Length: 186
Image 1 (cartoon, helix red, strand yellow):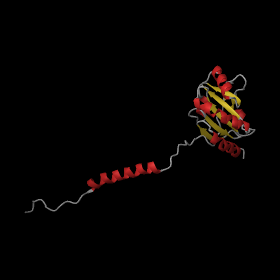
Image 2 (tube, rainbow, N blue to C red):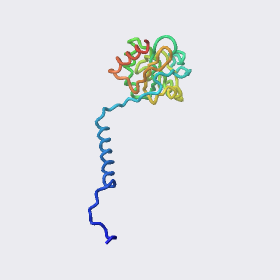
Image 3 (cartoon, rainbow, N blue to C red):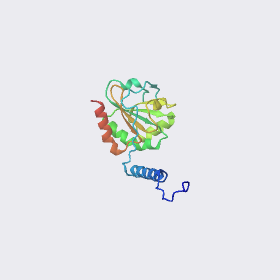
Image 4 (tube, rainbow, N blue to C red):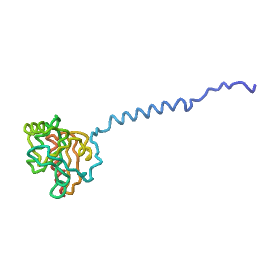
């Protein structure tokens, strides 16, 4: 009988093992993702690049405005992006005062702020800024790669961004930021 079906059992083929192998690979990927260290730092593409050209009017009656020219020559500076309506900006105010007391020169960019609100914020939280520019359209903020407030940048004496601190500066961050300023001066 030449046309009769074979009664020999079939071996499991690729159709059985492929889904099992794909599931095992997926499971291994999930376990790897859960076990590796958590890294929440966002690497900025602006580190090592010159701060863009800008010229902002004064945001405060008692401080001059801010332009790129202030970041070229002299010594490394901090550029703090902040707003009076920003809760974390009030949280970092004591640390900015501590940085200024340690000799850091700090310039600010007030984002979408009203002068009266800013004056109340500075009166309540202190004013560590040498200059404060008013950025009503967030052009400078976006131009330097800032995604929100507060953010602080270390800018060297050539006007090159050397470090970006995302979020409020906390007490533990002060020595590190002073170190970044020192590195930027070398």
